[in-house]
Amino acid sequence: MAQQNIPYKIYLEENEMPTTWYNVRADMTNKPAPLLNPGTLQPMTAEELSGVFCEELVAQELDNDTRLIPIPDEIRDFYKMYRPSPLVRAYCLEKKLDTPAKIYYKFEGNNTSGSHKLNSAIAQAYYAKKQGLKGVTTETGAGQWGTALSMACAYFELDCRVYMVKVSYEQKPFRREVMRTYGASVTPSPSMETEVGRAINAQFPGTTGSLGCAISEAVEAAVTREGYRYVLGSVLNQVLLHQSVIGMETKAALDKYGIVPDVIIGCAGGGSNLGGLISPFMGEKLRGERDYRIVAVEPASCPSLTRGQFAYDFCDTGKVCPLAKMYTLGSNFIPAPNHAGGLRYHGMSSILSQLYHDGYMEAVSVPQTAVFEAAEYFARCEGILPAPESSHAIRAAIDEAVKCRETGKEETIVFGLTGTGYFDMVAYEKYHDGKMDDYIPTDEELAGYAAALPKIG
Image 1 (tube, rainbow, N blue to C red):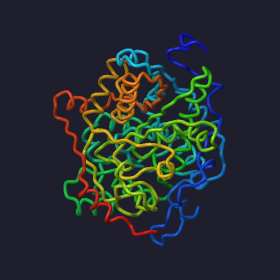
Image 2 (cartoon, rainbow, N blue to C red):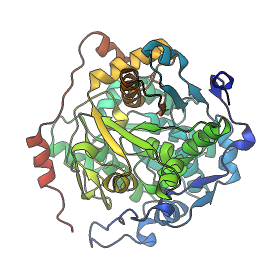
Image 3 (tube, one colour):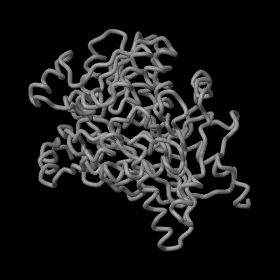
């Protein structure tokens, strides 16, 4: 189809929205290693996991073989409030960069939570309600996941208890108030409300917290309350499964106009956005049907893929959760208080870790000020103020487009714009005032965390 006939925004019709989630594990030769029981170091059983997670979500977590899993009608009805989301051609950005590259972004900020997180939040809340639970507990970094879950719980009339990483709780008060508006209780983590929170505060006085700390508190809060379960916004297999709607819609929109991407780029913290965006493209790559360059972009201050170890590690700082084999900096790693709160987890999804280890994708890390430089550049071109997390992908996409300008190569670049940054104005203020730094951990610091990894296999 002629270039000029491709619209600025590619919308799918409501009936073109996916009816199934895609489980990329079904096409992986090397499956992700199983979660291990922290007490026995044996693979976690469904019965053991059901004490922490909802039963149906446990089944999804352990399913390595079912390629397509139907999306319940109740979840699809909720999706229709904001899905399908648009795939946008970044014409203005292309012109500003004077690049021969064609740049597209999948925009996931068309809902009050401001991000892609609602795709899994509504699914997890649905299964909790279906099981007859009273409520759920969770952690949140930047606050996008906590906001999404509070919205989903309000929809299904479930209690929602959120442990928010302390530095984000202080940096993002408006995100916190949105959660409370939807009925959630929000506690800065580590807190003095839980045993593990008190222990972490005693060990690390004055700590700004981490997602690993908040996970420990949320799990303790769930298992000590009758009728509650813990839900997680990233990392787990089930979350990447729910987020596959992003990639399936992206591929359907591209296919509609005969567009084949050369490079697919996503920000990477725990893996929910990246895993969802790349899923159907990775499936084609795994099946040998088509090849793509797939690039994960992470903060230089929390570089789990680019500088971490591929090993079994605890998913949380308090070491009460199962162990996962993943690229990790160590569960004791406390990241610098950068402003991309959703990308401050010490590890990476086991699915993405295995795919990266097997050479199916690349990874780069970028410093914080370069990320905000790209965010501002994008905002002035495309009119959307991006979240700091999303801006990591923007940084890499701009860098790729500049390379195309220098080489004359006409690549098609697709990246995930995970959400908006309207609750991140403190971060933008610090960038504009020149008060933002680029802390990067030293090799010696990372070696110290790596030395404490569990000695398993």
